Amino acid sequence: MRTLAAVVTCLLAAVALAACGPAGPTEEGGVPGRPLEVVSALPSPGDLRGPDGAEADAAALGEAFTGEADAALAATIDERSPSAAAVRNWTSPGGGTLTVAVSVWPSHLIATGIGGDLASRLVGDGGRAWTPRELPGTRGARRTDPAEVRLGLSIGPNALYVRVTGDVGEDLAIQAMERLRLVLEGQTG
View 1 (cartoon, rainbow, N blue to C red):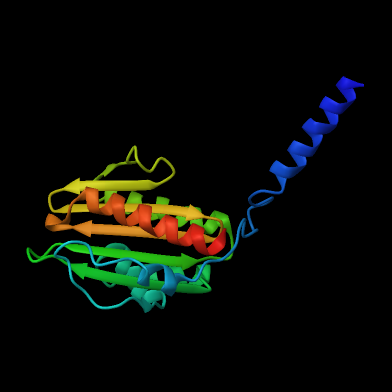
View 2: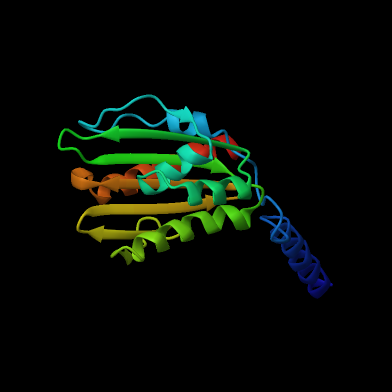
């Protein structure tokens, strides 16, 4: 009888775990967030200043990802059809930047690919792959000359992205990503 109870308990646990996350590559795998609310919830860190967050189209999202206008990247983003996106930027007195972006994609697979794709672009431009130990689920890259850090994290269909340049530093990138994650998790449960 105890064996039957243990088997039933294991089966129930397996069913519960199977219900978490996407069952296939085209599923959302979670609750879509509200990107503008997420980026707007972040305080201005230290001496960094910038405008309020804003909703972003494919071109603005692509520019947030790389720091420059890129028509090919914008077209790729448009093809992948994000349902919502928002961006927020800050600048330090020394000219460094902090950019955060939150976007909602049709599937968890696409959301996950966004961070990996953007990290590999920086690796291809003289950077190195990097995952901060404080954020083990992230995909990132960093380069020292010129200084730039990129971090991506996906939660269900949501992609969180942080890019810092110049004197802003990777500690602030880690802090911004942690805050984005906490705000999104607060929205989506």
